[in-house]
Amino acid sequence: MPHEKNTQVIDAEGFRSNVGIILCNSKGKLLWARRIGQNGWQFPQGGINRDETPEEALYRELMEEVGLHQSHVEIIGCTQNWLRYRLPKRFIRHDLAPVCIGQKQRWFLLRLNCDDARVKLDMTDKPEFDQWKWVSYWHPLKEVVAFKRKVYKSALNELAPLLFNNQVQDTER
Image (tube, rainbow, N blue to C red; front, side, top):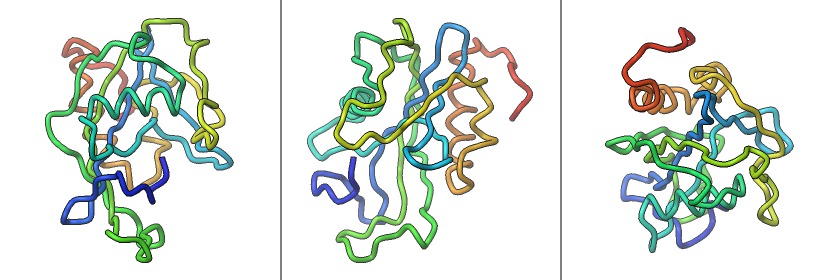
């Protein structure tokens, strides 16, 4: 979703409300997507519109970014609180009002319950991603851009027990 949409929610501190999507398969691997035309990889994420709950935004973004319907996934869990990150100064657009200085996110852990051939990255006129792959649970911490790393670590740490039944998994953290 473009940041310019006036339906986006930016709070008084300058943080844009957003959902993050951690999608796993039956083997506990996570969907990791490459930003279109870039070498940056991330989880799907997107803004919450004024008229949406975080869960409604989750399903809209899931369809827009990876082509999956609500019926293709099940929610395993969600972070209890908003997780925040600040944008690097070079990404802050001071010509827009209100100014967005970062994101506050609710992260959802989902399980794919259909064939992964249903994943489609071209569901909108302006796709966010051009490639995706399954990766180990802690792998994203190695590749995500530095300014998002703390939020990714917090979300993965909070949601891991829901996926792994409180058992320690990969040692990549």
